[in-house]
Length: 271
Image 1 (cartoon, rainbow, N blue to C red):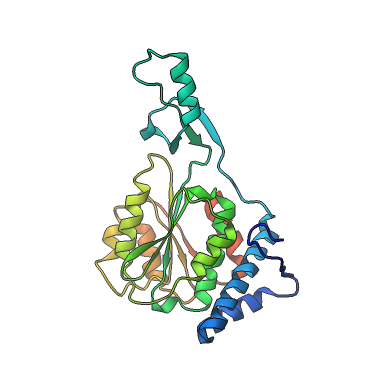
Image 2: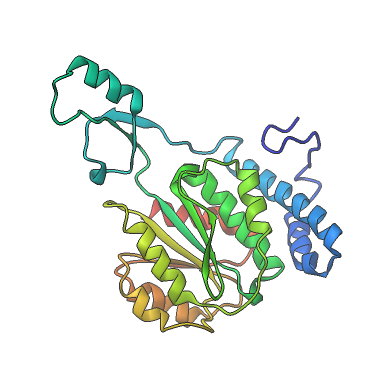
């Protein structure tokens, strides 16, 4: 049985080519609802196996180091057991010797996924592949995904430790609709990365065609960094301007699903 999906079925990525994954994406919204659900599950499995063929069957996990620190200093979680042991060893200690778990990963990632009406079909499959790749490059609890059209909304929160399959399935269940409010998405992303006093990544996945909301360049200028993954056919001028308005950032143009892993690895290796 597949430990990630709880299913007995398997798919041979050599039999189902990447071209066929793209075809599923392009035909997805033309299907009847009951077939669409089956196609979504099928595409999720294909993307998962493509990811596994690229990175192997494991994904990066958080590891922890326990030490007394101020919670504001690190990306931390309270280590209850170690804190109790420290209190027993020093019952009169004042203040209480709180002990936190520090993740060795110090690059939390916020992915802003454009889900406006123009994101149907192939682009949504590309978004699922981007999410699958990020799940291999950073620990799952350090990854946050926000979908947005006219307004932002949660897709996957920090500290949710779900399987890559379920992450892909969540992205493929998104329903493209509405206008593109990039400025509001960047504002929410800025608020999320502000919680971390060390390097973090804010990544915008979009066609960079703002059709709603305030000027996105103003919001981009408030960011410490912004990387833009541009969908095929997107507005390269707007995307580049967004990265220039931020203090630092890169524009990476997506073209084929097969190139997404290498593209994102370049983004992380050059940070």
